[in-house]
View 1 (cartoon, helix red, strand yellow):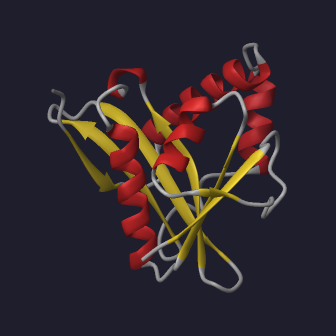
View 2 (cartoon, rainbow, N blue to C red):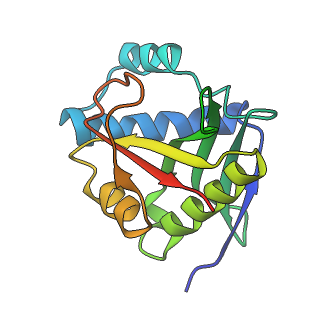
View 3 (spheres, one colour):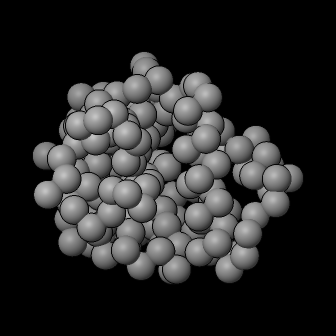
Amino acid sequence: MPTWTIKPEPVIGVNVDEVMRQYFTEMGQRVLGRSVTEAELQAVLAKDPHQDLSPPDGAFLVARSDGGEFLGCAGLRLLGGTPKTAELKRMYVHPAGRGAGLGRGLLRAVEEAAGRLGATRIVCETNSQLTEARALYTRYGYEETPPYEGHGRADHWYAKVLG
């Protein structure tokens, strides 16, 4: 069984930019049903950048194999409002990390990080085509909720009280 470690890493860097490209490329394939163009990749990164997934109001967690290979990531950022809410962003499990419980491991690590930031609630969004993500969220206590912000092609929103 594969093993991994999940630790915070800086969200800015060449390696992270490549991971974000992989993430958005796969999301384009699955959600749009086609490859995304370079212009679309640049536009989505400009509209919803990942730089806010860093301290003091966020975190970016990376899962790596024992040999240091990238297996997955998940970020979070605090949102305004009451209760203090964190948003799960950019959760991605590389094909090399799938099928071994890494998605749950990342989700748990993000929830713990959100709690350390003082959040009492976590929210996330996804799309109908991402059936694995929707199943993961509901399996671990997330409930569908009305939209909390306008985000691209999201059509499912989830929330969970942390505690």
